[in-house]
Figure 1 (cartoon, rainbow, N blue to C red):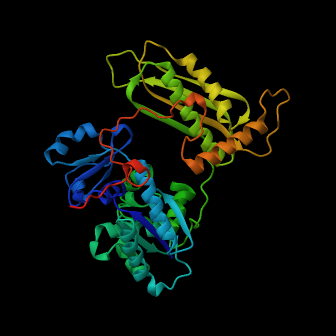
Figure 2 (cartoon, rainbow, N blue to C red):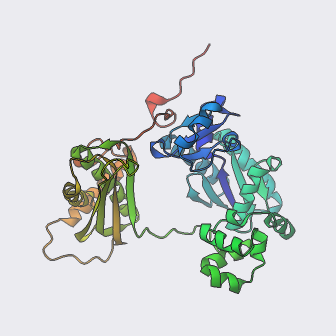
Figure 3 (cartoon, rainbow, N blue to C red):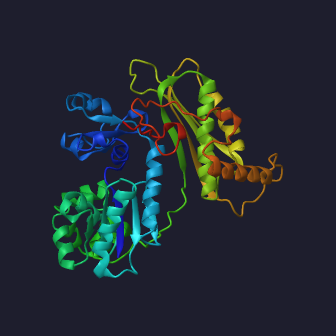
Length: 420
């Protein structure tokens, strides 16, 4: 059996842990630069606030219903996520972290007769230890476990845990389960299936495997088999290394100063290079781009990019930054205000078996040792403890008007309780 632990309205729930006055009230959390709504309390959902909706579209609704609004506090969310994952590992030695608010749990060696009570105990312990409500679905496959976790949110009487394993119960659930909510059925497949009047997961299960494979390839067939109780997504599945890496951000305000743009692009390069090193990869091509605000239709627009082919595959922050800054200086025009910039890495390959170039002016072994030391120091002492000087402070201008304190990760923001 496989379990899927899914945190309920995670970002909102994190804010409520340290502000209980928000319980029972509509609350939303926003994306970078306070752009879109990415987490909603149940009360906010009932008001008609949609996932991914731009904040400006619902400002009147928020004001009318006194909705609490928070900027994304990733320091807080990441720390509470780690605490949840650590708690899960005390219940099972096999935990596969799927995202910041989801994890799969391997229950194959457990007594099925005790799993329902065991699952409820997990839910209660996480709530007690961390303060975050979770939904735990337990089923024969990952896809069915995802379905079961969704049922927990819909039916409070399940007490946060749904153990779905009897074939007749699975059929009953899938008869009413929308096809678009099935894990692995994307928007394109969902649209295609609905056009053929396949509305529910059970109707999808009744299709022949030959038809599914012909219309939806092996990916669709894998989902079909999982819904039939046949595990096709192995536990501990290793995500393939990224074949391209993109780091980009929109800015809170338009930037006209090239020195500030250089610091930002250098920070993006550093972040991308660190991702390369973590997956033991190198890049041969790097694209730098900058663009003005496309919503300012009354102003002339400027969007430029440059693709750089590096002399040899590398993951050295210093080498990559040097080429990136040279490209940025070519792209930059001082008459424009830039709203976004980014770095994309291509031609990514493993960091083994690379043939050296004959006339290389880079001491690559020295760079590799330095990057390893820098990563170790940053892992131990915190992000950007050591960085390339071109990065400056490493801070990217962001619009965060409603940011809560980093209660658990910064000493000067720890909650203070005063006795009356």
